[in-house]
Image (tube, rainbow, N blue to C red; front, side):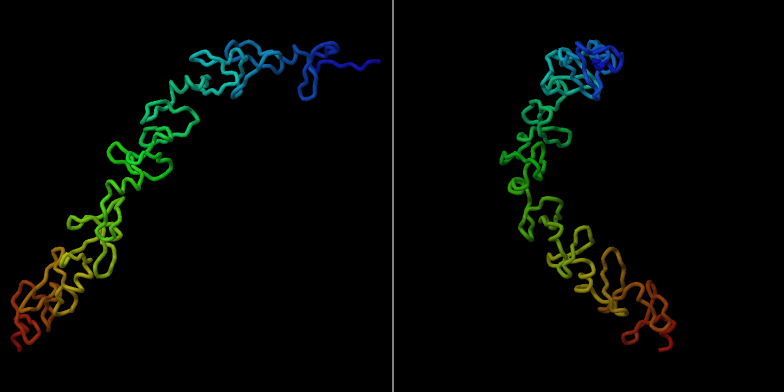
Length: 279
């Protein structure tokens, strides 16, 4: 007795019939198409077993229906792109939606390397230094006006030279007495600490931080012997070649402030009039 070989769905015999296997189970053509075949996105007809089924993101097309929505050219075995899930050939997609090179104004094809800066796009080879004409690629660059320069060319053509180290100043810098400095080169003459962003003063064209200037050049208070800077509007008292901080100008005996008041002297001491009566 011959063993039966039937369709797994309709149980009709498959002897002498065309059939297809799905997960090792046999199906007649009619049942297979009903169960597993998809409808074409364009014509909505069933994509039969004998037709080419092209799929993309769970969507299906007949081979003859898979066309560019703009030029109607077949996309079978050709690269394509999508816009709003609709297929387009790369030429139509590029003409409609791809960025244009800021230098040559030609389309930047999908998948090709491009450079982007401040909303503009370039072909990789078109984004070049305005001076040496070499592609900038992934190297650092500086924009000046509407042109772009690699760092070596920018330094040669535009960068100021630091008055101290003689090297180009690329970013930031300090201008002192109409001379350019790197921030890291503009140091206190005394302590060598950076002066950029700090209060400083000068003597004989040399720059000093306030602490060094006071320690080196300021007069010393006759009472506390600390420097009197006189900078920033600070007030002090001067009398007969001697100086005092305002807060130090007090009577030697009773310690009352003598700022704005009469006073007497006894040797190196200053006294208020009341304490001076007892001299």
